Image (cartoon, rainbow, N blue to C red):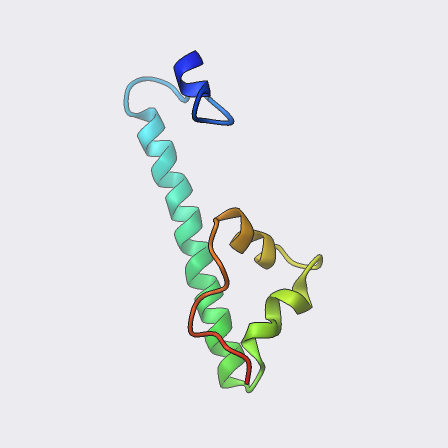
Length: 83
């Protein structure tokens, strides 16, 4: 554990060998689904004539979208620009 704590904020034993890999896959599934839904939301906004670049600002505090972008280390997807 001390070796893992040197480069990780949280260490959780998930079970036997391979359980941590399955847990990581589960996490990546959640991240991928969030990215897909955000892409679909941007496409919907753009088709409807809404300035998709302003959505994070408009939803700040009322939605998890801005925090999803921050927590993943990603910026709002490229190609989304103000009209």
